[in-house]
Every structure is written in C-alpha cells, then in structure tokens.
Length: 306
Ligand SMILES: Nc1nc2c(ncn2[C@@H]2O[C@H](COP(=O)(O)OP(=O)(O)OP(=O)(O)O)[C@@H](O)[C@H]2O)c(=O)[nH]1
Image 1 (tube, protein in one colour):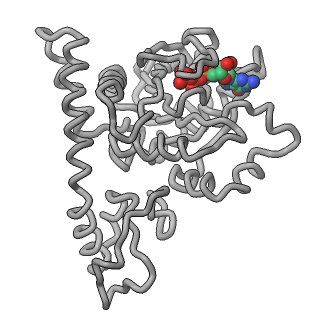
Image 2 (tube, rainbow, N blue to C red; image 1 turned 30 degrees about the horizontal axis):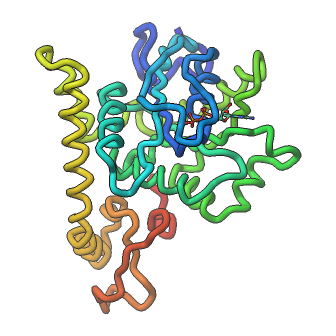
C-alpha cells in the first residue's frame, strides 16, 4: 500500500487504486514523451511530426506506490475552432477511456514556446469537460533542459498569459526533461505526483466528472454496443454540446450580469471569456459594454477557482 504522502487520502485501503491522468496539449508539445516518462517506459510513440504523431487517444498504466496510474495520451483535439468530426471522435474516445472521470488533467506545453495554441487547447478542453476541470489541471512544461540557468519560477513569471493560466490552475505546475533517465526521471515523476496529491486533497480525493462523463459511463455499461460504436455515439453528444455552447453566449451574458448585479459571483466561473468592460457598473448595467474576451478567463481578475 502507499507510503509517505500517499497513505492518507481517505481513498480506502484497496490495492492499486486507480489514478487517471489525461494528457492534453497542442501537437508536438511532448504529451506522448511525458506519458512515457510517467510510465517509465516507451509506451506511446513519441516523435516530431509536422501533422502530429499521435492519431488516436491511447491508454497505458503503471503501478506507483500502490496506485495504478493510468495515463491517457491524446492527439491535439483542438486543431480547429470548428471542432471537426475527428476532434469530437477523439474527445469521445478520451472520455470513454478515462470514465467515470479523470483525477488529473495534465496540460502539456513546451518551455519557451507557450503560445496562443496552448491557451486555446486549455480553453477548449475546459469548454468540453466543464470549467470546473481547471481545479484538476496541472500545467507541465517539457524540455526543462532548455531552461538552462533560468529557474522555472522565473520563466513562468515573465509571461503574463502563462501567469494567468497558472492562476486559473491553482498555481500547479512542474517541468520535465523527457530526455532524462533513471533516478532523474523518477524524481520528475515524484514531483508531478506531489502535485497530483495536491489535486486530490483539494478535490476531496474525488475524480472530476461531468454530464459527458456520465454519458460515457452509461455507454460503457452497454454490453450490446462495441467500443467503436460507443465512440461514435458519444462523439455526437460532444458535437451537440459544443454546438449548444455556441448559442449559449447571450444566455451566458444574461446570467453573468444577473450574478454580478446580485453580488453572487459563484456562477461567474461558468462563463469564461465573458468580460465587462470599464464603465459597466452594478448600478448602471449596459449590454453594450459587455463583450467576449478572446483570451483566458475572467476569474483571474476577481477570484481563483478555489
Ligand atoms: N529535448 C526534449 N525533447 C522532447 C521533450 N519532450 C518531448 N520531446 C520531443 O518533442 C517531439 C514531440 O514529442 P511528442 O511526445 O511526440 O509530442 P506530442 O505532444 O505527443 O505530439 P503529437 O502526438 O504529435 O501531438 C519528439 O521528438 C520528442 O522526442 C523534452 O522534454 N526534451
């Protein structure tokens, strides 16, 4: 059974409790290589490829201090804002593989190459999974060796977008050199697992779930439908959800303003990207002063998702 920081999570005494980690990020960020570091073996194919190496979500696991750490590797599922059928299918596959819900979402990005696509990957994955998934997110930087003499802390504090992203993720981040081997590699895994432990503590040891995950679980219980068919069916639900959200904007604005004017900010987290420009006060609401914010969420201006 687990020892040290892992023994007291209220997760029961069952051997090999599952910890489901899902790796997401843009093409070439190092998701597969990170998965291999965590697993301690070359389980996923990791190679530089202009169009992306990983085509299908895949899952592998290892035992770690009495836990079964289950890692789901994904392709870039958010390569176009239009949400292609391929992306919806991969999202569905990812949900089915990690049902009934993920414990930790690992957002993988490269040191020195944090770009709009990384922000987009984060926003899109939270859009599909639900905004509260940010509470389960850890940002993991690959190519740690490229930092040279610069500390990771210094690196992240020098970029405003990164700072915003990390605030949204509760300040949970770490860096891997996926070229590392042996003790150095295991020390990195240990560092990540300390953050995983934090996520568990902050979420009362429960996994993250959502309506789509519930649908995935219901589908998994159907013995009359094969896995491919389950993926196809859930992909339709994913597509509908994404389409539904496009029409949710006005309703979102309305709800958001109502929350703001009533002083209740608890619902604001549900509508990331909606921002009130200067001049819109609680005593003087104005639709004209409300706009969609193209970058990360508004809540880092007001409160973190605590
Ligand atoms: N030097 C160095 N190279 C890395 C590191 N992590 C990943 N790479 C390299 O970056 C390239 C892309 O890595 P992948 O793991 O395939 O990236 P991915 O995000 O899974 O890519 P797709 O599956 O194509 O979306 C590979 O050539 C890796 O060897 C790292 O920490 N250091």
